[in-house]
Image (cartoon, one colour):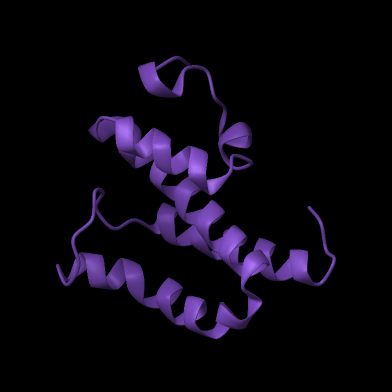
Length: 106
């Protein structure tokens, strides 16, 4: 499956990319690619921020639970509409970040 910017990247490959790379990809992406990249960017952000700054875990959990509803209500601007996929991947990134701190690797 080749679609321009994403080339032949699989979901498995996208979930392992660092946040900085995904952010660069989103900056260059069109609307269709934005929707595909966004969940993985949310996942990487959550994973990496918690590994770097574990003291932010409570605040990040609040953000995780409130971000998609805030987008749905129009309270914040975003490049993509709210989605369960973004919430799911943000949640997975949160667990990966916490798991990494506890020595649990996937």
